[in-house]
Amino acid sequence: MWAAIVPAAGESRRMGRDKLLASCGGRPVLARTLESLAAAGLRRLVVGVREEAVPAIRRDVLAEFGPPGVDLVPGGGTRSATVARCLAALGPDVTHVVVHDAARPFCSPDLVRRVMAAARAEGAACAALRAVETVHRAGPPGVIAETLDRAALWHAQTPQAFRRDLLELSHRGGREATDDAGLAVLAGVRVRLVEGERTNVKITFPEDLDPPAAAPEPPVRVGLGHDVHRFAAGRPLVLGGVRIPHPEGLEGHSDADVLAHAVADAVLGAAGLGDLGRHFPPSDERWRGALSLALLRRCADLAAQRGWAPLQVDAVVVAEAPRLAPHASAMERNLAGALGLPADRVNVKAGTNEGMGAVGRGEGMAATAVVLLGRSG
Image (cartoon, rainbow, N blue to C red; front, side):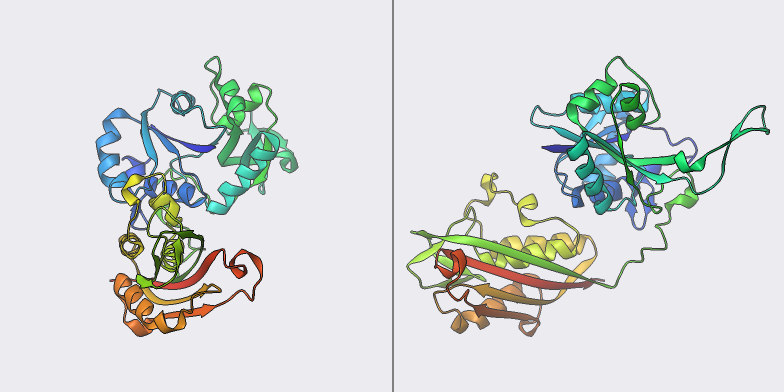
């Protein structure tokens, strides 16, 4: 299992105020950083913070913007000490760890995943950029002592990722370094360099708070959702909130409405909010037997908190039986009502798998949905 450690216990002296709470593109810096990690698939996020900053972070970041699964841990006197404390707070099920600077809010989920993949394969990895400018080593103040070969030089970034035992080895003995990759090298660990991103800047000065101009926010977003459920005896068949006569229903923790689930996943995907399982896990008894249309409404509310509203839905349900076309209009009305849309903005189609695969053998149903979101307000 993967977890992420976010050292955030610095005092922001060069910024002149707590930079992690500063607004960056309409959201606090720390919120954007946590969102990037969550969007990469990380579900366990441990943030090392100054104790006096905890109330403000809970109120202004986690309560308003933060993804689920965030724990706050008191930081140490140095960056390395903070990471070590967060590492000690992880459960025994965590086998791999990503360490990412709290002040790098522009890191893409793709970069996080690439660094994770390299660490999974080789044990340790670090995002970095090749040096593109001439680098001099100074001797006496203001005097060049040596010009270094930039072909061998890289500028380290985060995320950095490690097999947990290697990261624990790196922090053994209270070593200090400016980043965890440096600590790992001191401990004899081989660290793979992964090409970073020019836009993955570290917030240090007030002018750094502007999001990179290279990534303007589009006025619309598209999400794709897909879900499959097997048939189960003794359960009602519910699709798009419509109860359909059939000898079997679909198996699931909620009412197993495969169509509503696909639409909800598409809404979450378009808003950059992960998937349905992240927000309504089957391990949570609160959602046992829940109406999937109600979960869809909650997903629309989550998207609205990010400033996005549904514009259009197109979905298809694939099943050999029963015949679904007579129920399509009712399903469209229910889905539209849950999303606050006119019924003509929702389209539901039905198809078969022509006898191929599990769905074709009549073992279950599948649904796929595409959702268009636009800026609300």
